[in-house]
Length: 121
Image (tube, rainbow, N blue to C red):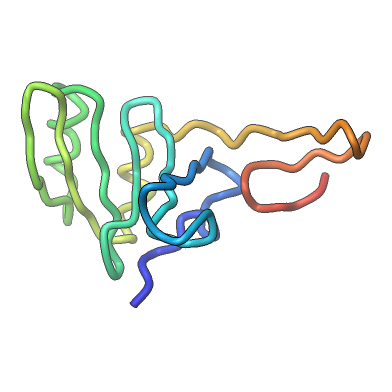
């Protein structure tokens, strides 16, 4: 059973890092984490995405108000929620994923790779 592949879904648009402590490398969907201004997004199971916020407050309150978003835990450092893939856009608007950074390769002048998608520009 594989979780949602965040790299395939949004790797060209959003900055995705690999948590090397989880999964079997960068191509394993379990290890993919979307870096956001106000927290992180990560695979949470079949058809589910998880999110953690960096702090409590307004963003947590807005997440609670979204249909299908379930609060898992909350403390003075922020909150953890899970939600269906269909709510990804709404949650992303609140957490504000960072844009994928173009990568340049000195050994290959003129080649720019955007995000983790491997597309040459």
